[in-house]
Image (cartoon, rainbow, N blue to C red; front, side):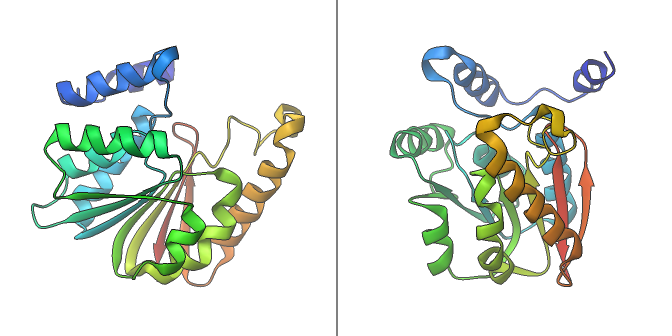
Length: 209
């Protein structure tokens, strides 16, 4: 009940985003969409730091990229990476329909490979891709993130499996182990100051020193 009440306080999004969230929840067109408490946190961060360059790792159908574009300065830009061609194609269509095709660039490919050749200089990075690969992405993410830049890592509690061993599904053991490694690294890394926030499916909020 408490979470339902808190969710009810979150302002309504645009009709376009509301419709996209609804379509993505249908069985025939399901795609993972950022949870509402997390998207509200993203908006708050963006309005605080006003980033010029944003990187998203894990586009899905473009919902969070469009959400961010709605809350960024006019002269800002977003690069978003998606490994699945089907999702990348849908995201491109959704971004075009939203009117942000000049603001958002979708790169189709494996994040580990794309991150390796990207140039740095990002003020905000939203990490929402394959959870078991977060630890592999981190060296390039640290290289790409500006000093004073913010890294937001989503789903770090992984449906409660990170904090409760009894909830760990057998086929998820490796992912959970790698997420533990990632959390331990970002909490102890001398280049970062990190807080873990238990909203949505859990997020880690990091600032590069």
